[in-house]
Image (cartoon, rainbow, N blue to C red; front, side, top):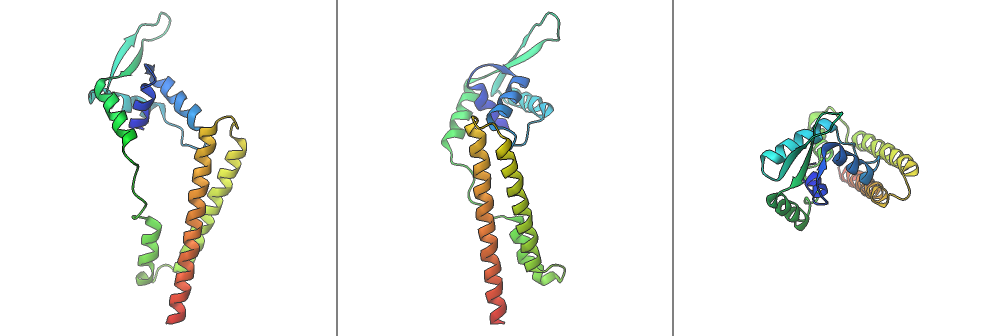
Length: 174
């Protein structure tokens, strides 16, 4: 959340609740909604790190609100974030680790593990489809987020199919 908050502040000064609302509006319901407490904790850490600076704004009938803006260091951090490619492909995969170690334990069948994981992915796809149907059609960013998640799930399902085929071939050789 740290760098996404910095990027939103590149648009201009804002307070924590405005940033939370901006993330929710931009990403829609498919993305886990940020907790306002976490937003303010993150803003405090960013300020301590010198990436943003806060200013208290007096309000007549309410408590003061604190607005934040990027510092030069914060602007550099956002630029560096946009410049760098994101994470490498998943090599450390918890499911694959389960699949790899299961035979030696006698506690889990590999095909059962694949089937459970497949059901989990299919349920996740169904939930995303429902979410997509309910999502605001004008929010293309949220629609792309859901579409990307669906494509990742489809790739994971294809990979599970490949794993099962490989296991079946290994059994035939034994």
